[in-house]
Length: 483
Image (cartoon, rainbow, N blue to C red; front, side, top):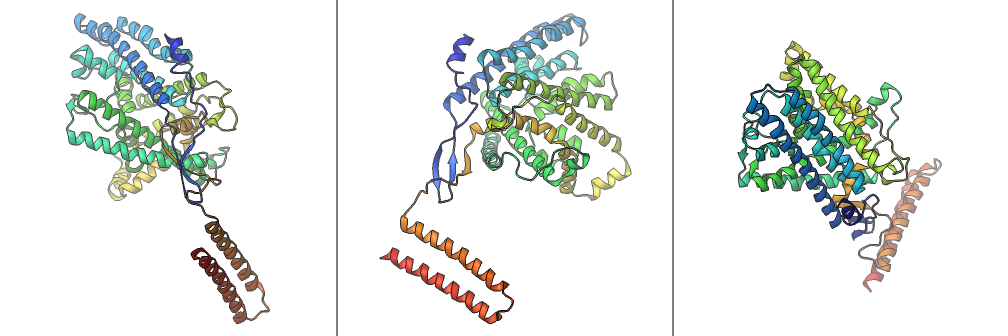
């Protein structure tokens, strides 16, 4: 079965793209392009279906082998039998099966690879929650179907009661409109950054600590973080729309404008950035850790767990594509996974969160909260995170995921040698004459102004005469066009 899928549906690897222009606009070659292959859509749907089935299988095993067994025997959470089943069977199933499927189907596209490993990684957090959390959400304990939905799909419900609520048509249409808006934003960012190889501003290698504060590095990190934020928000919101259409449930916004609206480190990571992950980490890692550790070590370990999940995904990406695959699908050096960068990024943010918690309640913190506008606080939060953002984003850039994400978006690109949509020899002659006249006018004006011995009045007379002759030549050409 797997060999048949590999040789048919997954025969196309979508590693290199020759985007053919669909429309040429203007002489300067502004070209709209799109390469959304129906076979790619089929591969995406199949990989998502396979991973969700894997997570649902793990959920059924966890429900009957852990939740129901502990409830029937009235055992405490995290019993030896439950831990052995969870970490001895379910955890290896979630970690190894995606890697085996990727190797068997020979998947190479980074977006498809992320689709294969993303949901199982979050399901591991649900497994920790099932084993050690004080209490599962009420609806997840009612039957195996709701538990599988909660375990396999990292849905975000209301934090107050964790009871599912149903969406209205107005809320559904608002989410659908947000998907359209984010799609346009993602198209803009990817079109812009792709033209500059995702390095719009001048950059320096990070050899000394001062290079982390170089303005070009900060600006490039901001643009890369914006791409990640917009595409992540689009993916989360689109998933919420699909789930709402299928189940009728209402979900909390998973990504709530963290770069432009966060007012603190805890607000950024806990309430705005990718709440699918933060909620799973809070309930599956931080909550159980708080039962045995103080708040600060529990927070650090939670961020390190997030770093481990990202390192695992990058390991699978690189292991699947191999070191011979050229980074970014461009003529650059082959990419090798730099183990530790994700750990370092999340460790830094964990330390920032611990510092904020220690600072909370201090008189200076109260002054900042009352006197500093929210917009300024957002900028300050970004300046604390941006110096090390490249540790997070560069890994995904170098392994080619940004280029692979471009597959599903139309793009506007500058193509210098494109054929104009409307072209005529006389119109071209007018354009060339105007271009030559403007160049000669500026050259002549500059040389005349540099001659110090000339009289200023004669200099301006010469410039005016040059302009008049150019206008006469252009008028004669226009009369030729009319005739």
